[in-house]
Image (cartoon, rainbow, N blue to C red; front, side, top):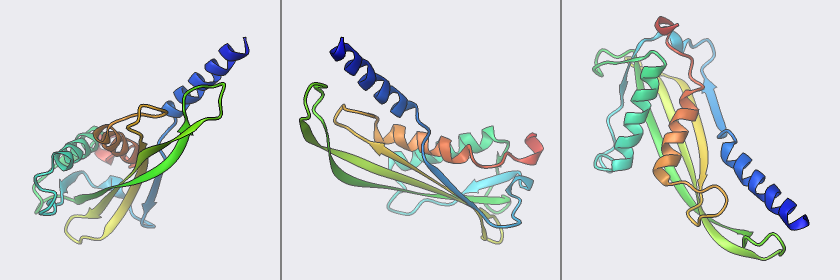
Length: 171
C-alpha cells in the first residue's frame, strides 16, 4: 500500500508540474497604451538567425498569437508596432531521482534553461512600449518535465503574449 501511495504521489507531482503555468515577467512603459495600436511588423532577423528553422517557427508563432489578439500584420513602414524577440538557452546540470521511489538514489541530468524575451516598440519612433519574458526548462532525459526545444519556444511565445492586452479594435 505504501509503495502504491508513493507512486501515486510521484505521478501527481510530475503531472501538476507539467500543468504549471510558465513563469512570465512583463514590463510596460508607464502611460503606454499598447492596445490602441492595431498593426505590427516583425523586426528583421539578425543575419546569423535568418536561416535558423527555430527562428522562423518563433516568428510564425508570434504572428499567429498577435493575430489572435486582434493585431494585424502590416509592412514595416506602415506598422504601428515593431516586434522583436531574443531566444536563448543555457545548459545546466542537476541531480534527479533515479526513478525508484524506494531509494534516495540520484543521478546527474542535463537540462536546458530557455528564455524568450519579446519586445514591442512603437513602429515609427522605435520606443519600447512592452516587454514580456518567459522561461522554460527542457529536460531531454525523459524524466520530470520533458519537451523539445521547439515545444518550449512555442509555449513561451503563447505564455508571454497571453499577457499582452488585445488590440482595442478586437474587443
